[in-house]
Length: 199
Image (cartoon, rainbow, N blue to C red; front, side, top):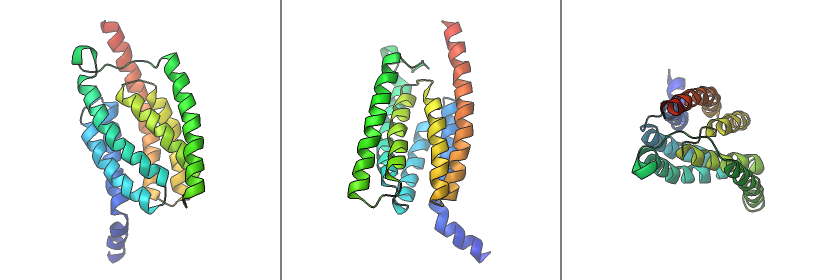
């Protein structure tokens, strides 16, 4: 029993982030506004986990998520026409082009900075996750349906990273996130079709 308590004492941040993370993604799939405050708790806890693991790009990503969570919260409430509730939409071709350009340049630049000036572990892979996580979060805040596709790929990469870093609760968390992102995409596609037919 003492061993269990010792283990929980060492991993309480991961466990707490795990719980808030799963709940947050589930609420996002349901389009519940509560996904944002729950997400804030997940972000704050995750920031410390990544700092101790020396995944500095992920630390910066969590700082960005703090800001984006507040932005997304506002957008979902008042980001629609005439300050109305925001509706699901599909991504525009020009948005895809810009996101790809920003994603490639951002990953290379951030990866080079972390490789050159820090003791970061997996600087380019970690930077890829950070940059594309930022872009996917922006798309989520705008209720762009395809943000779920980005999260599926990001989450799968995270499963590999956290397995390698032996952050096993986060490995499990991001595997669950992958499954939930698939489910979220299906739910949003259904809601989008219902939304379109109601117009």
